[in-house]
Image 1: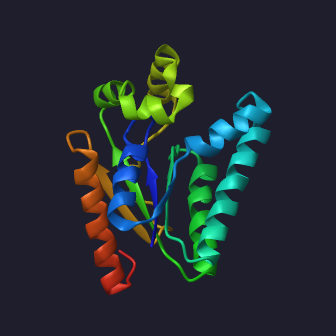
Image 2 (image 1 turned 120 degrees about the vertical axis):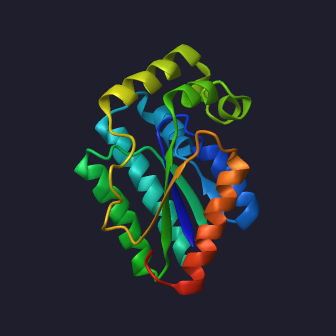
Image 3 (image 1 turned 30 degrees about the vertical axis):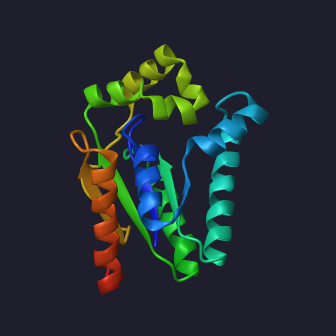
Length: 192
């Protein structure tokens, strides 16, 4: 089973993905890997750059599915943007074509905790763009004002969805909850 961890900037997506990868053996491909690569080429957040990033995601996911490699993806979703929700559905459809399933995990994290996590050593080590603390803090504050970073309702077109408030949970605790949810889904093979 594949996992897509959705959350606001600095909600803990990558760190949870790292812990989940240790527990499950799935390959982690976090959202800043293709973004950092794309910015070396495009130098700015253009629509062309985002199209390139989406292409990398789909290519990686399709190749992994063909080779039966379980993956963990991460990303930021604006739940008020229909194109963002269609993107999640397209990912699910791609895996449906390979008769494989994906669990979408939405993280809900307080703004105060996200600002604290923005400065953690692990985040700064793996995300070069976030080393400019003032810029990344401004991004956290601006996106909190302008985007709907958490769902009000579970997107009903997604088969497997799990929302976790991880404000007061460690990455290890959240990864174990996700692992348990995967086991429940795999045992029942039903859409929950």
